[in-house]
Image 1 (cartoon, rainbow, N blue to C red):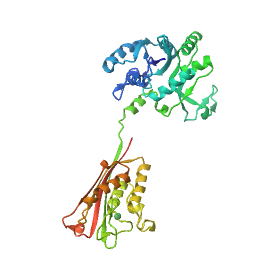
Image 2 (cartoon, rainbow, N blue to C red):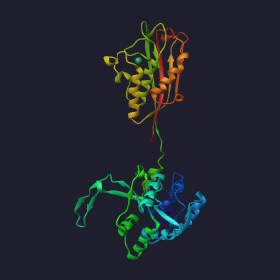
Image 3 (cartoon, rainbow, N blue to C red):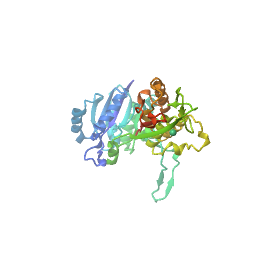
Image 4 (cartoon, rainbow, N blue to C red):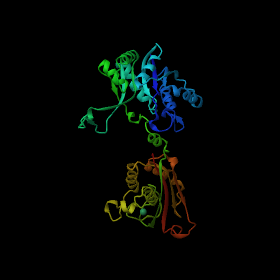
Length: 387
Ligand code: MG
């Protein structure tokens, strides 16, 4: 069954104040019309497209095809009419005889997805029509001729976009009658309703992104670079070595004659990492979130505290880019435990192991670490959020 698209680009389109019909304007390096045709072709649902252009824009389209094209999906170009309704009618009249279903689409909606095309076209195949729509988020007021304002029930309202898909014969017949009747409509669904009593609306999860570019502001907003928010954090901690304590580093218990002293398990490396994460979030330090005066944290497993810090990271929309931890200890030798430490931290940060580095150094017997009075650790992290 043959499906075709009629792409309506015949409007003057200069409300955007860009000096040219907005559909020829570049949007992140490709014209709006070019993007629209890419979407139509990329959906793999259409045998061809008819593009409706004003006389003035035909030469511009030829120029655009040379610069960006060729647009293989475009099989015919037809001249627009006085009104949008006339333009669409001209497009429908140019469809080949075998066309069974048609998607009528405004070129000023270049973000139409395959999902939307599938939903509307499948609806047309099933019921004769399929029009993409979204729930209305604003409350809509109706202003009467006398200036009196009344409210409409938002739950009963839908905002309608394109594509609007139809059985070709039905929509063509309706358009030809409308041309005779001089019926004034703002979209094809309205015309279909008028002659057939009803039209099928469909919606998709991504319908809200199928925006119509109208004003210069719309273009400017689109051109803004999409930069993820990236933050860096660093942390430092040190604990004293004491008899009768376990030595826990990055959640791994390491056999040693002494362990680190502290209110929790005194996992100095995880403490430095948590401080780095809190630093990146600008949320102070672990002393503020897990005070050592709180009996709740006595002997606490620091990996559990890391979970709580990671919840703060994800609640704010961030994920970890990478982490780098350095443990400063004269003894014991940590090389044999590195793989397990790295795996623990990667799991705790919810990232792949290739985003985590754990390393250890001695201080050649200098300072408190070198004299085996204690162990210290530093950590650095990057966290990122999609814009
Ligand atoms: Mg500490």
